[in-house]
Length: 162
Image 1 (cartoon, rainbow, N blue to C red):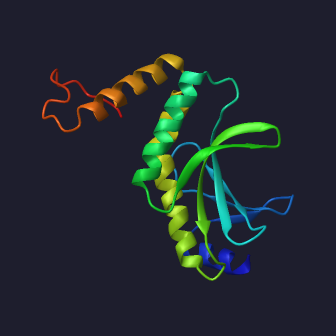
Image 2: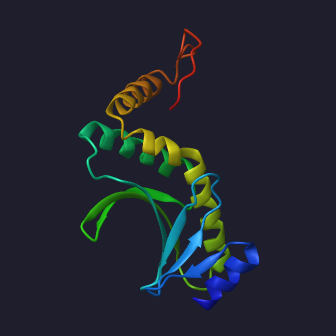
C-alpha cells in the first residue's frame, strides 16, 4: 500500500485511510466529489467507485444503464463498468485494476481513466433512473446503431445524446 500511496501522492491524487482500514482516493470529477475504494485483498489490486444504486430501478432503467456501461467499456481503456451486489446492496460501478503492486504508474493512469468515465457518463447514469429518460435513451441508441452507416442519422438536425 505504501508504494501505491507514494505513487498517488507524487501524481497529485489524494489517498486517505478510512476508519475501517480501507484506502480511498478522491477522483478528479467536478461537482459531486467521487471517491474510489482501493481493494488490496489480493493481486490484482482493484480500485472501485460506486456509480449509482440499482435499488428501485425498473427493468428499462437497468437495461439502459447496462447499455451505457457496455458502450463505456468499449471506449475507455483501463476502466470497466458493471453491476454488483455487496453488503446486501446492488449498485453500478466503475473499476480499474492494477495487475501487480509494482505497476503503480499504471494504477495512477487507471485513476485518471476512472475520472474520465465519471466525467463522461456519471450524471447520465443517474438520469437513467427516470424510466422515461431510459426509454428515450434506449430508443435513440437503437436508432443510432441501426443507422450508423447511413449518412442521414438525424434528418431533422436535432441533437441526440447517446
